[in-house]
Length: 466
Ligand code: ADP
Ligand code: F6P
Image 1 (cartoon, protein in one colour):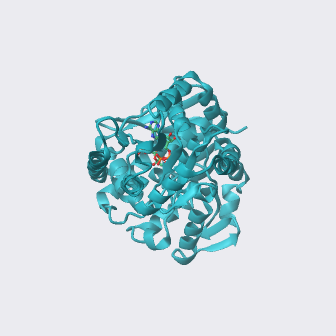
Image 2 (image 1 turned 90 degrees about the horizontal axis):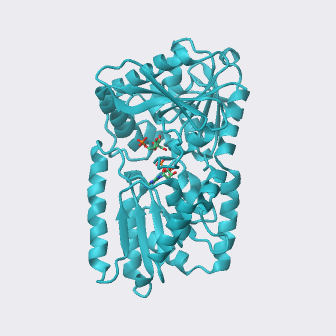
Image 3 (image 1 turned 90 degrees about the vertical axis):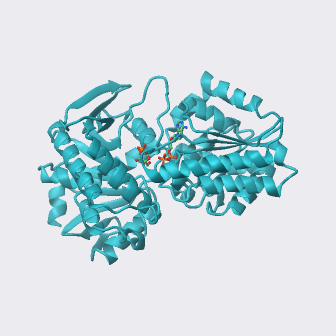
């Protein structure tokens, strides 16, 4: 079997204690790599005064990671800048928040060159390379420029936006052109794949030589939709563990005679937290008879704190959560708990298990693994109800959830009422269908589908000739 080299900005090896690692990409890659004697390469999360390309390598739980420090300017211009102030808002349809600054673009291109130069000497002729997410779109092009001939695939974890949105990005064509240096380009859903095809056909003057092929910029690539999943067996194992059961008991004890509603998200403006808080507020206002029977718990660890938009939303959420409790709390009771901490994964599993409703309402999301974790954690005999945004990639697979428009606090309030009033037969029916999907469309299926398709992609040389 060829060696698999996974490349992503964030590298987060699994650790023995099942500690927290926030972000769907890290969760999925740790799980996906476990069975490959491969390598996971990327940023260390640390800075150094001068970039040296020195690698810090370690092997944990059978996964070898090799990480490199970046300079402070790289962090500002590449990670906080182009990745998180330009591409992230744009790909999540927040053109109002997208910043266009040439310096960011230069930092992005510099770091991709640096990653390529550091990685290239580690690559052996038979290795298969799998590059991840919006931070590293040009990495394939940089590796090709250094003479790397291996199969290289790219997977985008976030949405691919509609052509009309993408074209607001200065230099959009160059970004898309770089994607044609991969052998396979994968998206989370058929909808994002279609948006990419639409760009290639109508903006880049490309063609579609086959159902899973696109040709433009003088090159042909294979494309596909590969919905990511959770590590279902590992999740089931955690759920049976002492920590998860203790956490479930703790949550159940603190919600006696009350229904727990839970939300778990990185504190990100794409997650629809403001609208969700307002939806809960609306639910309390509309349903005085149900008020004292609920507790909403929102867990939202802070994320990308150096970016202003993230500081601003944090301030607004603090104010909103204070307003809700100020309005509705009593001396012996408060409706809302809002915490900004990370939890261990097995603790989260126990929290989900204790909940009667899971609120997963991003305004846009590539997939959303929390929705799948919530379902995986439920008691088959008495499951909770998933309320899911129709704009999460997961909505394409999870049709039995209560699907809502996350922009509408009213719809969220109505869905909460419906979830909390739903009889057990309907809850079990909906959950059984969701659970079956989460079990079969898991992270192993995702990895095998992508790596299989990459192995089946034509040799690069042959592709160039076609
Ligand atoms: P994203 O990749 O945008 O953060 P996902 O929902 O796909 O969104 O993935 C989030 C992952 O991070 C999930 O696996 C979730 O369990 C984890 N996570 C989110 N919040 C926390 C937290 N407070 N503590 C630990 N893990 C968290
Ligand atoms: O899943 C999308 C994603 O942006 C990943 O690429 C990333 O690792 C994760 O969310 C968390 O964000 P960050 O790495 O910026 O903390």
